[in-house]
Structure formats: structure tokens, C-alpha cells
Image 1 (cartoon, rainbow, N blue to C red):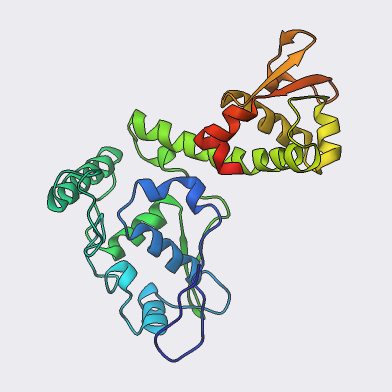
Image 2: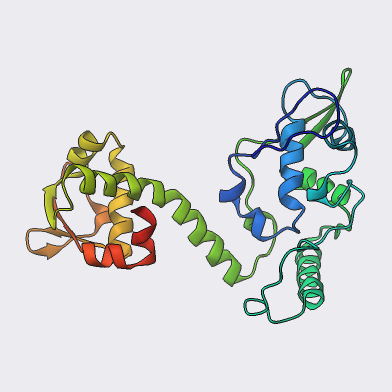
Amino acid sequence: MTENPTAPGPRRDLVVHNDWWASGWEHVLPRQGFPLMMLIGTASQPGFTGSLDDLVREMFDGHWRMIGGGLDGALTFSWPDEEWDEEEAPERREASEASRRKDFGALLTAAGYPVPATVSDLSELYLAWGLASREETPEGTRWSMPAVLPLPGDLLPLDAGLTRRLDRMRWSMRTEPLVTQLVNHLVDQLGEPREILTSLDRLAAATGQDAEDLRIAVAALVASGDARVLRGQELADAERLEAHQRFCLVMDWNHFHETSVGSHFV
């Protein structure tokens, strides 16, 4: 994702951390959490030294709408001008904002962290949580981010509902590309067979995927009700298949095409 600078000077492209979406922080932080991540990621690129304020001045002439202006702007949980969905969120915008702010504050307080009021305050929490690092060097301030971000649940006492939602999201992000590749093979190369006698090793050779990834893909198809795995006449546990073991993959294509999960892959 990139956004062009509005002021003269060296062009920089905003950087989205590869692990951001899978980490789940988007579902925990105020709306400025995402643009702040991009700002720090951009500051972490070679060729930049300075403060985050320096980067906002360089790229946006000191005012970036995505964070509400500058780093001294107040944190919010919705865009001021976004269209409000009365059916999805029947409470008024002000009530929703106050409720989410209260919940976020309680979450941080329970974990022993200060409740941030501004984007700058939130950047200090990023440093405390290990989402970012800042080092003073002879050349100036240098920023960095870890390759793998710590998870919200490792640092904050998330409620059970949000924990389950984030776990499902991460599992979906892990499995969907693997299922897509397997389904593409079944559809494009084999013409949607009702069943196929195969093994994980054979599927790996045919698709160029790793056998362990195919075990995950087959297990995901079974879990969604799109397939069954048989050894002989008995149902088998896809997660326990050995790579060399023959099994019969029985597809329910009607279910696959009718469900929301199935329709995602076609």
C-alpha cells in the first residue's frame, strides 16, 4: 500500500508490515494503529533517520489525514466522516466511540500499561510491546520492526470472544491459500472429481506444495464439510495421515460451491 507525498523531497512509499494482518492488532487498537504501523515501517527503511514527526513533515507536509493530522492528534476508534451503518451499529457513533474507548482503556489498565491519548503516546506503547524499536545513533534516530510481531494476546488480557475470533482469523489466513492451491488442482487438472485415490506425497508432487501444507489443506476441507477422507471404508483423521499413506479424498462439490467458504475459492 502506498500513498504519495504531498510535499517536495525524496519520494517514499508507505510500508505495510507483512505480519500486521495476521497478528490481529487491527482488531484491538484505535484506528490510528494501522497508519502508525505504516509510518514506523517506513521510518525503518534504509535511508531514513529522524523522528516520526520528521517523517510526517517530509512526506505529508506535517499533516497526514490517516492519523488525524499529526502525532499529537487524539486517538479515535472510527473515521469522523465515515458512513455510519445504523443496522450493524444501532448505537449512536458517540456512544460506540465512548464504549470502545472505555474497553480499550480497561484492557491496558488491566495489563499495567498507561492509556494513550495521542498517536505519539501509542507509538511509545509500540516500543514497550516490541512492535517497534528505536535507537539513537551518531547519524540520528533509527527505527526498526521485528520480522514477526508479538500477538495481542501475549501482552494483553483479551476476552475469550476476541481471542477465538483472532484465532479463527489467523487459521483462515494460514489455510485459505493452501486450500486454494489444492482446489485449483482438483478443478483445473482433474475436472472436479467426486473422489480421488491419492496420498499427500502424490498431491505434493502434482501441485508443487509441501506435504505438510497439503495435510493442512485436506484437513481444512474436511473441517468445512467440503470433503471426507477414507482409508478403506472407514473415515480417517486427515490431520494424522502419513505422507505416504493412500487415502480416498471424497469431495462434496455441491457443498463446496454453495457455502461461503467454498465460494471464496472459486
